[in-house]
Image (cartoon, rainbow, N blue to C red):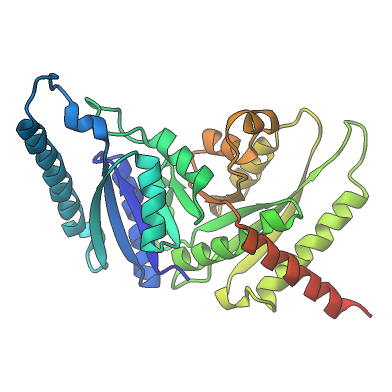
Length: 326
């Protein structure tokens, strides 16, 4: 259950677009919000010469901290967060690391932030794009990256938004189901939420037919849907549909995911798992999740599965097969 949501802000109107969906989630679930602002170390030395006194440096530090605190208090007092339990915190350090550390200290179940922020102005605002990418790769809790708040115009008029969950049959990808279900339920409240389970089948060659792999995908999706109908995910009361897409060598999977999302006009959010790779290994293996992030204007729910989550899914799957065995 979503009880605490962390919302990083950088002072720009663009970063504040995350407040619309964070506020909606808080109202639906009763969750509290923690708004945070990070002051980067170089801001304290901006426009200052090396011969500036320690006193002046300290005054500059106080000024930046006070400005940030005032800004967060103004945001909390705005009509967007009326009736929501919210608190604020200003920290000094590297934005990505500070966000991850604060999520852990706050025991947040979700981080909601914009993936693209305002232009860096005199070093005051951090680039939300690069910071968001760092956070989604490293975060132990799900991260909801908001691309364009206008996509929620329809849902704000009473239409329940849906979530497309990209699956591949692995326990790793399946760990997205619970966070996606929680999000779908909260965003649709008081209506039933909606989940679209999409299974991606890789066909080894350009001439080969999916055949057995597609049949296995259909069986797997049926089992996932049963979790929503009679299993551990029934509690969320969601409407569930499913589809299978195939892709061949040379066909980017991220394009298939976006095409499915666009075809299903009720899917406002895409949910995916990420390996969180960095450096050369990530460049060699690629990242479908980050490809989707770069290409899509839709919000993304990104989950970096923890070992315990994967083991839980694996054990649940084994238990189900044992129950079904003759």
